[in-house]
Length: 305
Image (cartoon, rainbow, N blue to C red; front, side):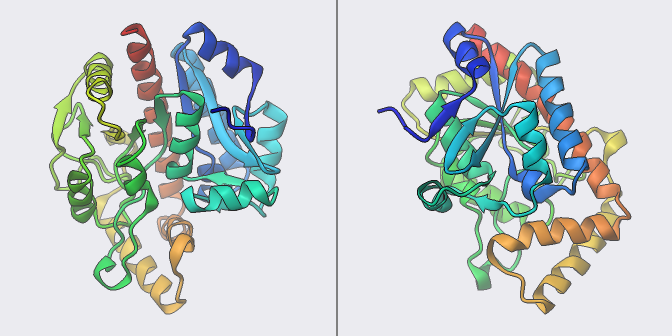
């Protein structure tokens, strides 16, 4: 059934019709994950990297009550400068669309929109997960439940390290979501390449990952896949520095009673301040790394027919 709120650019329509590999990109990293102009520069760099690998980049966002599947350069620049955007996850989509609002789509919402458009591969920085102290707060990202119900492969640098990684992996296992470590046996921790927790399985080529995607969905298993791609070692942060910055930021969030969808943007901003901008540089580097891999996986998947 056609979705009237779904608006594809001509380039995206043409790519999907011709079988050209396409890669979905989320927009909360632009609206809530980075300050301007770094957010715009990163978005432009990521789109360029996807193109260099032979795929079409598809930045997904909500603009004036419409789901944009692909954004023109001018629209992307205006979006990056707008500091009054919503953070839109699954529950927020119908509200934002019916009220004509604009906002960045989270991993969960981007997966939904990518699925509607027929896009199988989606690149992000890191997925959401189970928050620390979740036994008191019950704060579990909708990204995880979306992975359990929406068949899109998500390329990421693991779970944001401000979260509880072992509990997140346990949740994904319960939901039947494959967790693939790309060229690693260990699940990465966003700013660092290792978390101390094992990945479910290691795969070393985009072709191997594409075959797994194809096999999973041919079985009628309507779940996503997590492709965990470690940040390059030369771009990683010192683990002790990161952990201390996270602990201090978590304590500050508790003191200020920050909760819900405001927690992650708050923590990322504070961690960046406490690492004197190093975490933002690492964030940018890992997204570029994920973009290259995502485009290669999309190409390999397309070649399977």
